[in-house]
Amino acid sequence: MGNRMLRAWSAAAVVLGVAAGAVAVTAQQVTAPSANSTDAAIKAAADAARKEAEALKNWTVGRTAWGDPDLRGVWHLATYTPLQRPVDLGEKAFYTEQEAVEVFKSRVERDAEVDPRTVHYDWKEYGMDGWQGGARPNLRTSLIAEPSNGRLPGLTPEAERRRAERAEAAKRRDPAAGIQTFGNTYTRCILGNGAIPLVRGGNPGGEGSAAGVTAEAQFFQSPGYLTIVTQSNNDIRIIPLDGRPHMSDKVRQWYGDSRGRWEGNTLVVEARNFNDRSPAQNFQGATDGLTVVERFTRVGPNTMRYEYTMTDPKTWTQPWRVETEMPRVDPSVIFEFACHESNYGVINVVRGTQIREREAAASGRRPARAGGE
Amino acid sequence: MRITVRVLGVVVALGLLVAAVPVAAHHSFAAAFDENKPVNLQGTVSKVELVNPHAWIWIDVKSNDGKLTTWGIEGGPPTNLLRNGITKASLPVGSQVKVFAYQAKSGEPKGVGVFVEYLDGRKVFMGGSAPGADGKPAN
Image 1: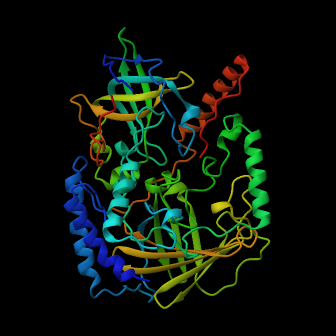
Image 2 (image 1 turned 120 degrees about the vertical axis):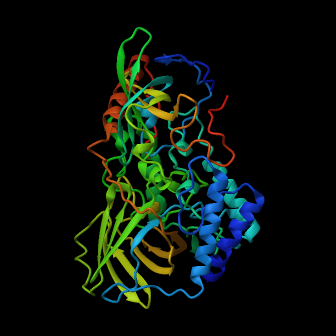
Image 3 (image 1 turned 135 degrees about the horizontal axis):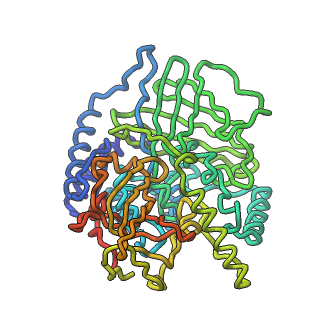
């Protein structure tokens, strides 16, 4: 795969972006543009990209004191590249550089289109757009590299049936009703967004929230372990690398049970023993039959190649594989995720929901649907 | 959306949001806050809580009759702000700010802050830096 091409292209994309005068290509190491200057952001990104391209020429991965390849740092999980390839692109796995810049620009603009009339804060006001957070352009047309059409494989009959039942249940249930307002594992402070797999794809497709919000993960290494702490929910995965076997499959965990091993400079991590999260779901509707194999390879001072393969015989007719990159984030800070302690949102949502239910009952209507993601 | 009401204190502008289409949010803004209660606030910052998943800014607002009310304003997470060089020092306690927000459905003095700006019109955080956006609300 053309990782060299991708890296070489990063600098070119920035130059093109500057030439176009329109795209804030925040490439390579995430930099700190001044708050109100897009031009400064572009220049800073271009400088960082050139520096990164230069640094890659004779770059080899550093080692920890005990000799493992050094994967430490805070890595950015946001991307504008969608998980699945737009159908009209067929087997076209890569854009040309010019196409990629145009696509990136259109997605940046779409990201910035949060309607100030909605009951929501303005994303760009809080630096939440993906480009503000450091999402990079990508020659890939989709995160999915296999199957070759860049699309999720077909569902098994069992998964088709589950999907139909879920859709039917959703019709019967009103998400604004009572505790169902907190009907998923994120709003219940159980799971963060994207702890495994770490990168899930950006817009289009209504997944804009995947682009830039709390999308960081810090990697710690110690002899025999990799530990990943995600910004979202401060979730922690402690991954043994000492060859010990997996836990009994009777032990089920939200993030499964991970075991890692080195293949050259690549850390390969296999996770299984996932919970059945019903009524919430594992990623893309996977079941407790899911196995995720992740491959982490540091290919530059500020770039981690990240690949993963999802296998679940209860859900898909074949495995599917993603290839992407994670830029390093600097400054590298994981803030406290005060999901309960300072989450005034719980009280506000419950009170608001109760009032809406009373209003609906008084008027004989069903309550208005509320967002629950 | 027309933000035409600019007076001291709290102005609850009802019925201006006929065309509003809520976007999918990562938690239930639509349940907690009222699309029919946009508010323009002006006041003094009394506390800033920069925590995940939502920052909260507390401001003391004097209404037209002189009564002081503390409003809580929900905003985005602090991580991206920090990466772009914005810290608590960017919004010190005692700052005078204007906030455009939607009030809590409960009617309490809380809201989701669409944007926060200083009295001279400068945005407190990022607004205006997005490509193709001038950081101003649509007319």
